[in-house]
Amino acid sequence: GPLAKTNFVTSHSCETGLVPAPIHFFPKKWHKRGHYSENPARLNYVDDDGVSHSNYAPETYFGSQWMILQFDWCQLLVRQLDRPDSLASQYKKYLIATKKLMTDETFIPTMLMHYMPKTIPEVDEDGYLDVDEVDMYAIRYERMDENMPN
Image 1 (tube, one colour):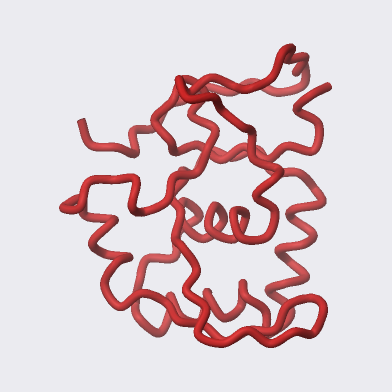
Image 2: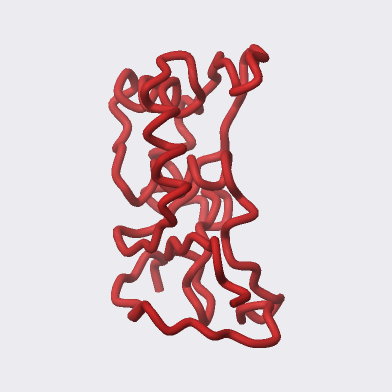
């Protein structure tokens, strides 16, 4: 179906709740935005093609602990974390060194948006899935968390 090979990570305050949200999406005084905006990452890493990247500033994304992740994505992340010079490993080191929270609600959505953003569902301007037909039969999804202050 149209959602095959799709990764779901909740956060964005939309009908589906299936889209990670970048830190600038939230109000400036919101605690998580301030936490990750202080001393932002500047990373040196080597991509899968052997190209070195210097002073890269990855955007941090928020999600929640409720995720549906494809096997291909999980394999890719494990392979990246096995390489000490990868973006994932360098971002992990940065989070540990700066004593930032490295929760599944930030690390996985951030890496997903940097490595495989096309696997995130597209939503239209009203926050609904941008597909003509959805034929998902094997999962159940309930949005139970609140990630945006009211």
